[in-house]
Amino acid sequence: MKIGFVGLGLIGGSIAKAVREKYPDSRIVAYNRSREPIVQAFRDSVINAATFEIDETFTDCDFIFLCTPVQTNISFLKKLKPYLTEKTILTDVGSTKDSIHGAVALILPDARFIGGHPMAGREKSSYFNSSAGLIRDSYYFITPSKSVKASDVERFENLISSLGCIPVKVDPAEHDYIVGAISHIPHMAAFTLVNLVKDADTSEEHMKETAAGGFRDITRIASSDPTMWEEICLANKDNLVKLLGEYIDKLREIKSLIRAGNGEELHRIFSEAKEYRDSFVDL
Ligand code: NAD
Image (cartoon, rainbow, N blue to C red; front, side, top):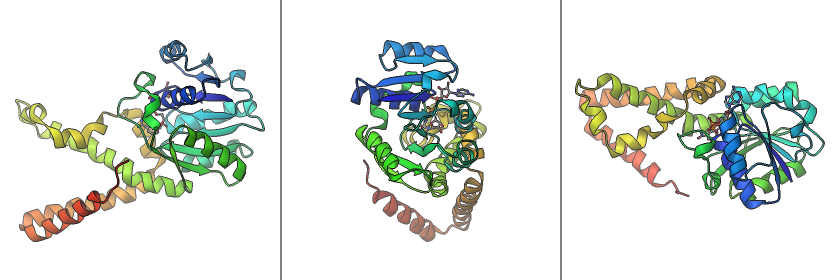
């Protein structure tokens, strides 16, 4: 099996390591724009070949994973075109799916493209923070193009299942709405909470110094890469505008209930949230 990675960062590196662990004899090739991750990946025996341009290194892959920021993934479609063969399943790991499906339909209408998004990750990017275990036991959204054969979808599902992921098949637009609510809005909340404290802190910075468990838990993801999040927000604009509107309405409601001293209604809202959150199954 030959697998190509365009971008060997946190997610590309983690999937490549998981493939190497599960399929020690596979041939793994990678493009990366900087040298250090490539050097380390050779040292780790994760990759067999590397390139700093998209070239024939990618010929005849069984799978190619696009693992750069969402708009950047789109910029690689044209460059990959000459190297896709009959058996190549092209996939990506981007956090939004609608925009890449639109671009694939225009640039690579005949490609066997299956969008993908592992629901795993962390706020520290780069190959140097990657690990095979990162994606294990995590849900993995897949969004097959309409023209992709069922047997190819099965091939891809088999691959990611064999790496320990749980495939969840959805439509690209539905994917973007779902992750808008469960991933993108929480990041907006974390970024703004951190900036709230930054702007509201005392001159001695007591807030920064003493911020403990709850604040740290809820804002961990504010350390995520700003370029990645800029691209995600622009690619999921309509969903985020809608969901942010609903979130702001909920914050406004809390504000007016506090102002009105309506403890009973606040209690009802907090109880409803607690009950729903307690019903989540932790993997
Ligand atoms: P990362 O920063 O660790 O890796 C990004 C990779 O893209 C690196 O190899 C970098 O060299 C390359 N890259 C960035 N800009 C580039 C450019 N202009 N030209 C060429 N190469 C470029 O990021 P990551 O966390 O691995 O994210 C990669 C993808 O995975 C993104 O599309 C993101 O939406 C998605 N994703 C991230 C997470 C997460 O928690 N970090 C989770 C699921 C999916």
